[in-house]
Image (cartoon, rainbow, N blue to C red):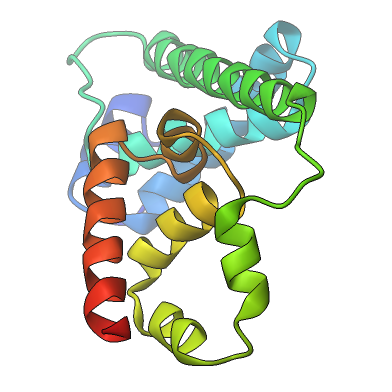
Length: 181
């Protein structure tokens, strides 16, 4: 089934759920700009609005947003788009709070014991052991040891739970201990 301009919204949605790209494109062309304009009245950040519109139509394409037959397609898309925009704004606010928290933190000028140890190593065993760590473990070591972040700050930075940070730090220490002895 290919999309033609005469198709109703319900027909376009039905075709989209079967994977018809032309129907999806027609639906997007019909409602994408309209949704973006309406969401921009709610949020001045064009990037957040564009992300919300994209997430809305991605949900439609993937079928994660369920349309009830006989409902207003514009209203349904508005509801999805508005929820996506609220989620994006909340996420942006959380990132901004974290950045303000990190920016306001006072950093010590005296090197820590870990920094002194790392400064004393000249691309020797420790550097090789660090490069042999998996990227996930190395990211936790870098954030907690080299950057001096707490486990909570590391979790927020990497987007993983605090327990996962602790587990990865323990695994990294164990692997480094094995590699260095």
